[in-house]
Image (cartoon, rainbow, N blue to C red; front, top):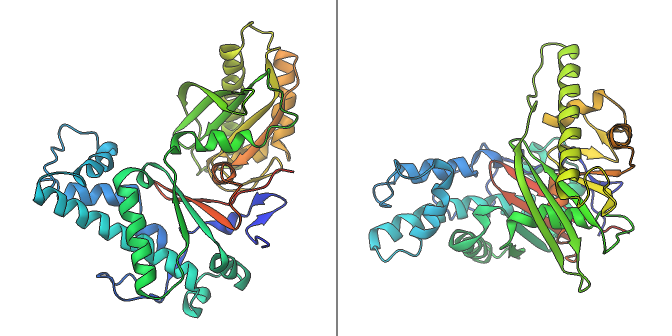
Length: 362
């Protein structure tokens, strides 16, 4: 099945499901009327956290003793509590967001005319692709454990109650390393006696890993300390200011790479034990090294038309060794770990919906 959301192996900028507008609800057997809402406005980690805080007393959660970002983990534990009240309210929250998630998928699956017209940047081909998708793979912390299972149950139930053929839902238990595994599929001419550096450049952190394939094809991952992302602001008063920040961001990324190479290499400034491909998952739309004017890392487009080649050249100038750089949209990197699933989409449940489609690397 031809994927309209992929162009030359890269995801198109209009693939986001956060901008799906619910003009008409395809079903009405849920408690909320969510017409007039965007998908990204009814489901997120923060919304779930807010609901947990609203019922923290019933959930027996002391907000003073738990970091806010860890509240979803506490909710997950509440779902298996022996306390009847605690479990009741935990299931109430899980059902609320399970229904919302189900509704979003039903909007995509049914493709009602009202909802199609509301999404101006999608033609019918985009809607038809969502209708024909077979597997929906959920990743992210919200997709694991008891909460993920509750979401899956609620989605399947709502689809079946409304006589809509459900997607095959897959919950990924190892979300932490999904982007790394996906990036590994992009390594050209892989040598099993070499280590390979992989970076995951997000809006908050740069996660670093060194990987190596064993003789049994098992992927061995060595995680390095994550580093803060820097210069990720998006709004600038002048083009000159944006370019200055792009230079700072580039220098920071390049230094992170060089420091990481030194950290994982057995011989400082030698790097002979490291393969010549560096794969970077990045929270930005990018196609063959070309960024669009959008997102935190989009400013790097101001330094060169092809940032992959530019970064490779600058690293060579610094350490006298050539590395092939491959930039991969973070959603695509995540999805590429599941390229054995035909007609599938990978959705990360987090701050916002992340979406990616598996790309088969020839």
